[in-house]
Length: 250
Image (cartoon, rainbow, N blue to C red; front, side, top):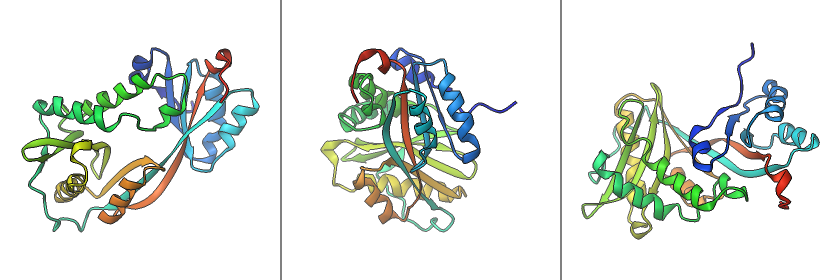
């Protein structure tokens, strides 16, 4: 039996009050299966990603009569950590504790207000609920110490930035990160990145990866300056079955 490409998205489903499923289509062999799965999926919203520029799946679904939203393009950067153990470890960055939750929530609420993610492209998703999702996401790695962790950067003893990480045996991914707008341009984002690089290099984690929307040029310049390199990109699409009955023109 072929393994399903799509899977349930319980956080999205709970937040938006509809059934949401999502998946990533990596290669040509999966494309036909993906079209069939998405077409028959018993969900109001299907969120799927394909390698940037691959149009077979969204075009096939559009020809079948589905309304498809091209929601964003996500770019991934990465770097090898094996030679980074000599990097300085900033003193103003530390691992977060449960007591940092309120500060992290405040940073997320202020930093992601109006942020253009793939959710923003869907006119049927409440901007208020999308924004609340970033706060939930920011706190999601706070209490997990083995496979995930959260880091905070301080300025004058005040928590002013954070980064959440998912950790595997040979790779760490920075999942979400932000600096409070009141503390921008003070080197805090660079310090967070530097601390994470040094910490996981010291623990023999081989690779660091991070992603963002293609329009987010500022952080991409920071990543390039730190030694990360662009290595892949995905286009994100939404198939929202509710669009067929709303009369909304895209």
